[in-house]
Length: 94
Image (cartoon, rainbow, N blue to C red; front, side, top):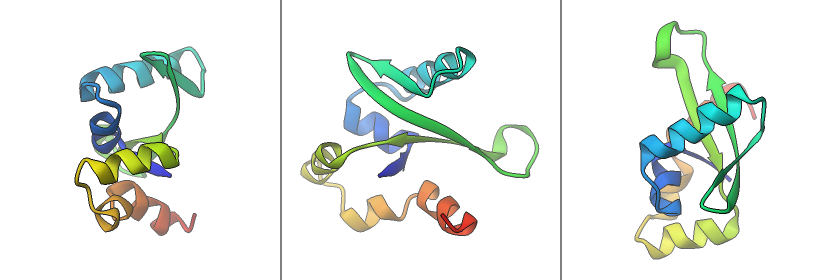
């Protein structure tokens, strides 16, 4: 499932800024998968029609094992599904 970068950083146990930098470096190298601590992670940026940095959303793909980590850390599954990323997908009809 696609989650926002803050949630993904908490699950992966990395700093949010580190995750953002890795994603930008991978994007500059035209890679669709980034590597953090030997974990290969798929990411994507969503750009809305707004100007500046306000419309960019960094999404990270987490598999079922990562979802189980979220639940074990106390996240509610409804909270996970109602992220800004999920709302952006719903708005685009994806």
